[in-house]
Length: 423
Image (tube, rainbow, N blue to C red; front, side):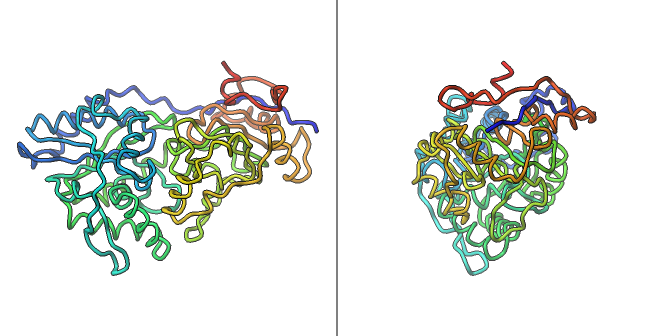
């Protein structure tokens, strides 16, 4: 079977000026007075999630230091639902892999797991939090503001979501997702957050905003009273900086790796054009006929949530799947579709042949395909020559070179990532 030729293209993202994270956050704390209610000796919980956010360790470090300057005692609470195998030590280990430790942040990381019922939501589900959160004198929610992978709404992935799902640990996350089946994500998360605002000492939130290269762009502090409305404003802003594929219609997409640190669903559903959630609307673009996921990232540690978004994968990828933790994540999120294993090729070449045999009639001159490292790093990617020609006429794209033949080795496998071919 013949294979299409590829060439590299680069998306022309606007340059974001470098930002001193510590200075930016310190200035925001001073301008907003967020920490004014904090008194000496008080316990202040800072949330730490499971996503790979480059600025997160520094933001938490500066925030912890500011709390200590008030004479209070900050601590980190892992706020990540079922991740880390749904255990306290497991979630601490997730943070360790992300560079968030007591040493790096300057505050202890809570490794316990002591759930208490906080209240009822819509008389349908029980809202859970860890006892240390319920007893904390103040809770500061820290998270990146961006689109959510499961739904569209005025607020998506950010402070409200971290409260409703992250602070509830595994049982709370499962209840949140179960309620979303009935109400939809937006209404369910805000209903749960409303109870938390009433029952917990939520001081406010620290929202991290990034550019298309996933680099820190700015930080915004919201008081508890302005959390919902303020986050909606930040959400609207963040959409303008979301990385995406440069073409809306593809015959196929090759993804080198998926993982929990890349996206909550392994691969960003709004990048690959498949939400696959039975109780939320599907995205309209992009439209991709076939998706091949080649491997899991090292950092995901066998958690293969999102593998179900693909049509095909490789035996190498399947061999790395931890079925237990993948099932826990999929069931907790009420999205078993995300954990389904697609058809498997024994090698990269075999899996890619499956792709080409199921995209309809094609030729090397017309087939529209893209090859990316993951759904997060989209500045540079490889596309088939048909799309390369279209890229030449666009000011937002630069053609870097080509053509490139599919570099299968003697065993029928490709290099670890497409970007390694540029090195």
